[in-house]
Length: 275
Image (cartoon, rainbow, N blue to C red; front, side, top):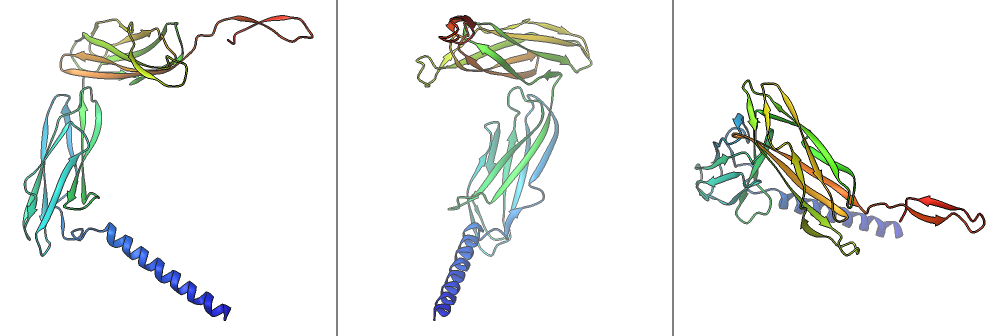
């Protein structure tokens, strides 16, 4: 008897699991998954483009369903991308287009990839994700792209450096060098932070004359006022070419020498770096 009850429970659980799996499968698959889709590739490469160049491409969708389909929306992954849908309602046998217009974000260089997602009406998951990429040309090579300020202490100057190279075949003048830093500071010593402008941060030199293939160094210097974190960027411009170097670091309290007793038995006094 006990064996029969166990068998019945196993059957019930198996049927239940099958029902759940079927329900999940039906929930995940759109009714238009097999009959409404993109014509050609959903992964497009624009090739090499300039830092301020705008490029466009039209992605075409075909409705091979037996009924009209409703498109809810299209959403771009970046503010640098405009995605315009030609029609929200697509009859059987009809087509819709997404016109994608892309302008590289300021300071972009190298290969970048962005996406545009198409959502059907009343569906929460994207029906199709379009990917497109481009290689951003620039005459400025910057290394490293991130400056990490190691060992930063309150009240003490700290520096970091980067190298800028002219990769073109003509002389260039780098005369748009600036820095903007923010201190995320624990001013009350209770673990909570506030964002404060970090005044006094400098980057030198303010100008570089670089021959073809020549490199030059820039140095970032700042004096943190509070413990916590510092974060910001150096912006670099030479004509229409731009670059950005991220700058960040963790700031600790300054360590001052203080006297303490090593132990009551010895009676010795030792110099200690702890506060």
